[in-house]
Length: 334
Ligand SMILES: Cc1cc2nc3c(=O)[nH]c(=O)nc-3n(C[C@H](O)[C@H](O)[C@H](O)COP(=O)(O)O)c2cc1C
Image 1 (cartoon, protein in one colour):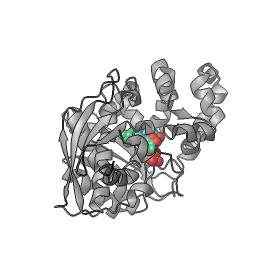
Image 2 (cartoon, rainbow, N blue to C red):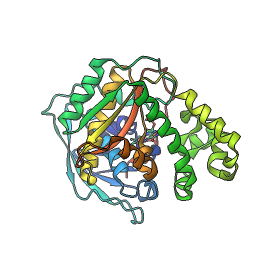
Image 3 (tube, rainbow, N blue to C red):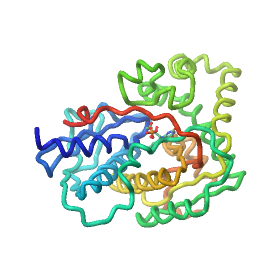
């Protein structure tokens, strides 16, 4: 369809948006050159590890922001009319989330569309330097513009505590059969498997050998060997070397619309870090794993009870991370 051409062009860039476990739950059905429906694929949700769907909605928020940044390069903006932000893994077909409309751009866009393809998750070791004050201030301003609060620290004790909690979370998630099964379905342990799916978490991007991931997810009982657990811990600690800064986002996160708004902000924040050459590694599972989240809450006790810490992350400069794959724009089109 000729009408799909402009949407295909936007998707070529927006499809690089990050989503939890790289599930890429989005589909776009063009209606005309200026209108399209945003749909979701119920088979690409995380009912066990993201039962409220909020984290997946964060992904949709990032995706919408990516579409808008891509549209800006064409002098356009994407207007979003939500239909229902509810996600249901048991739904049939491709349910409608929102109607999208392309309109002439009225707001300036400081972010260059080329950042969409450059942005990555950096799970590599960082350079041992705290993130500079100007970058942290840029993040604070982006969060504040969305009514969220951003806190960063380079306190060595706080950094070490956070890295340890994230390491423990790996084992908490793996001890839970439902979580292990769900994450395991998105693990790509060989290059062929990765190329076939073009989604999920590849051994290459996680920086873990495929055989070790296979043991971890598919032969979990072997993990009861203390030697193997210790080897995994050591590998994790090595990959976290040089981390001097951690940060967290706090604010409204009470429903799917909040999560989409939070995601749009996170998308801008991540692209801004990319422009500044600073890598980001979200520790989303600290939030989604109940046991890890309880430890985080306990540590943060005393803060505003209304405000929710909904993402914690490490950030810093690293070598260029491997690029995780995406489905083609033609596969995103519905
Ligand atoms: C809301 C959200 C939570 C995430 N949580 C984690 C996490 O806990 N651990 C992790 O290693 N990556 C996490 N990621 C990173 C995704 O796995 C990553 O974005 C995806 O695999 C695509 O890779 P890319 O960002 O390099 O393009 C998260 C991403 C999002 C959007």
